[in-house]
View (cartoon, rainbow, N blue to C red):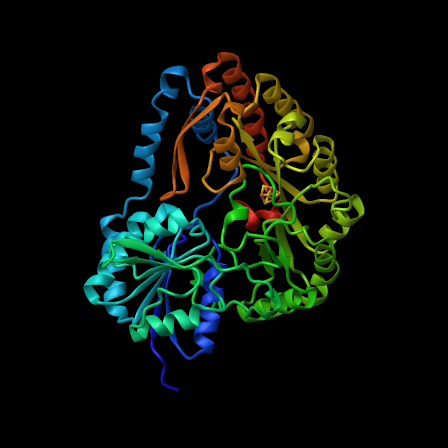
Length: 497
Ligand code: SF4
């Protein structure tokens, strides 16, 4: 069969040490519709995957101390220092530029699909520039292009034909067909196009979140450099969105596939697990669901059936310890989960202070988090948690409560991913702040930056020496936890979440 046209898919996700699930969801319908698809993955060109939390050394600890609790003289200069660091991180090396250019020119594609995060501005500008010279249309997309302000800004990049905002699985074939034929995609829902003539940005309305996830194809991950990954790990999602979805700081629930909660049927998920295991000779799975226990029946169904479909399967996932009744995280279920191959679990603890959890609208209780950590660890599951420091309203006493929480539970925790609070446009925090900034005395937001989905702001807690010392004390406990080695039977999942 003659291909209808050639699609070059550029996956700019440099971080993962396993295939990009979103790319697989685009490749499958395009191939089924008769398009030739080529994937350009940075990892296939010597770009190494980045580990998230790993077994820490003293240098990691020192870097975190400088970033999280800088001395007074440094605190004042952090913004511009961070800006230098960001530009340096995002630079395109000469070698990478040459590789990208050669691949794109040799590829002779009819259309280029660029999947990017907002940190990829430079590579996107570079690739779109090459495409413009070659006369190849470029469609840009990714989970972060959901804020109209962001999509509009990125649609102005020279050479970008359109930015797609939403879940593309069921419309990608139509968009590719139109772009190859030179037909305008201006009127497609979810499309943002820069209009040269009007010197304006045209914007379609946002696509509604996909309702029927059971109609999704099985992602085609065959183009990824499996032989270069340290371990063969299959990514999948049993659901999209978060059943809670109210945390004020959360930007996951405003991404393309994080908006509103939807889940697939158990059979659909198990079929995918079995098929992908056979296809890629893999028995390790990472569930990328924002909160895998949002649909408790699905969560328990996976636990009860995964070994029947893939004997010897091992898997990891993220849950929410919500306090709204049965959340599927009782001791009995966690024991069964471990027996079914669940070796690592992640959850958002954020703080050891109930006052702060309430302010963040986290929907959980300190004592439930503690009970969960202990139950999961006793069941044999490695526990990893995210935490936040510097949320507006956090006092020295709140930080001390978090430190005490960590000290009490250090033996049950394997990794802590500690972040500094950052105000992000589009989150509930932005609405709260814009509505009544005087409620947030210890933060001043100067500007919401849609291009990179961040804000320029100044927190003031660090001015207080006692607060800074309290944070430093907490960081010592975090380091004690993070320097533990992981057990051998879960080491392949270290640094993946
Ligand atoms: S539970 Fe997690 S995913 Fe859900 S809203 Fe809160 S932070 Fe976001």
